[in-house]
Length: 386
Image (cartoon, rainbow, N blue to C red; front, top):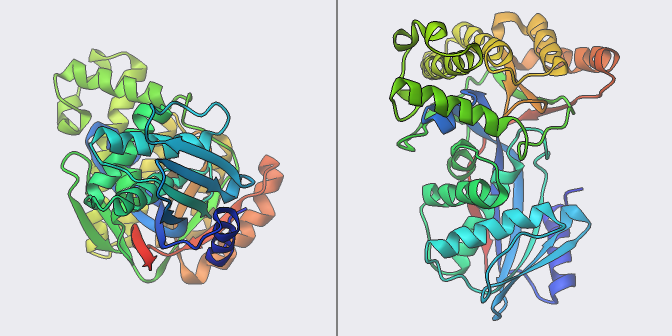
C-alpha cells in the first residue's frame, strides 16, 4: 500500500530520527503505440502518467546508503559504498536500488551516504513501468545528493543499465526515458536510437484510460528475452544493426527467408514502427479515426505476430472497441502476457466503458479489472529541497 507524501515524511522521520532534505518523484508511463520496438532501435509513443514513485532523502555522513521501502512492509536495505555490490537474496525491490547504485559507480559518480524512504502508487506487474519510475527517481536522487548532476537522458540510460545488467531484464530505453522526460498534456514520440524526443499534444476530447486486467506478468525470466533474441536473429539475417533499419518493402519475401516464428516477430516490429510514426502524425492532425485504426492494427499484430497477448486482454480490447468504435483507440500496452490495456476514450463514454467492464469482465474471466483515468504528466523532478 503506497503512502501519501505526508505519511512518507512521517515514516522517514520516525525511522531515521531526522527530517528529509529532499523530495524527488518520477512517473510511470503508458505506451499508446509502439510495442517491442524500443530494443529494436525503433519508435515508441508513450506518455508519462500521474502515478509516481516518491523518494525522500538526506545525506547521512556515512559510507552507506540506507533504504526503507514503505510499500514492502517497511523492509530495509543497507548498501555499503566501500564494498562490492551483490544481489539481495530476499528483496527483489532492493536489487533495483542496488543496480542503480552500481550503474552510477561504474560511471565514476562518487556517491555519498544517504538515507532514503521510498513509496509509489504505480501499479506493479501491470505494464506501467513501476520499475522505471523507481530507477529514474533513484538516479535523480543519488546524482543530486552527490552534486554530480546528469542529464535526464543519462539518468534514463543508467536505469536501463541497472535493469539490463543487474536485475536481468533486457528492456529497451522507452520506460526510463519517458519517466525521465515526460511532458504535461503530451505524448512523446521517442526515437530509441538517437533518444530524440518530440512532444505531440493529446486530443483534449479523449481521456487516457488504463485497464489493469489483473493477469499478473513478470518480464524477468519470461518470454520477453526470447522475443528480443528472435528480433536480433531477424536483424542478423538481413544484415542490419536493428530491425528499425527495415521497411515493409525490405521484408517482402520474409516467409521464404525465415522460419515462420521469426518471420512473424520481424513483421510485427517493422509494421509497428510504421504504425507508430503514422500515429504521431495522426495526433498532429487531430485525426482520431486514423489513430483508432492504427491502435487496432497494433493489437492484432501483438496478438497474431508477436504472440504476447492473453485471452482476458483480447476480451477487454474487444469489449472497449465495441463501445467506442472509431471515436477512440484501444490496444494492449506493455511487455505483454497480461498487464494492461490502454484506451483513448471520449470523456462522455468513460462511465459506460467502466460500467461495461464491471458488468462483463468478471463473468468472462473470473477476474476483476482496475480502471484508471489518467492525465499525461511531466517527467522526473526535484519536488522540494531544503
